[in-house]
Length: 157
Image (cartoon, rainbow, N blue to C red; front, top):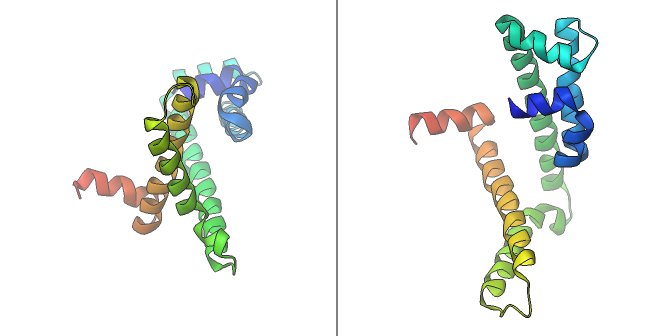
């Protein structure tokens, strides 16, 4: 719901926080809200969604469909990489993991004069995103999508 508020109040702010893709998602979220509510301003559309639970459910369903479409595009991109004849295209994700893991392992043992704590924190923060992308992405591929992954967690597998 925080992203909804950010998207409704300032898509450009969402772009600054989440990057170009974040701005695109925020603008899409606002556009869908305006279309569903018939309101012309971002704030009025957000208020209308808050006031009408049925519209909010329709908005959530539309955004869920949008999310699935983005995931399908990403899956097609990964499939194209795997069908490529390039060794690098097929192994870029595991190589990123190895490189980050190696950098963090070396960084832990280096004295402070070689790597500042701010850079090390930035490195570990970046690695959390990469590890999450890789392992959640791989789990999603193996379970057949986000529904399969969330169902897996609900069943306790």
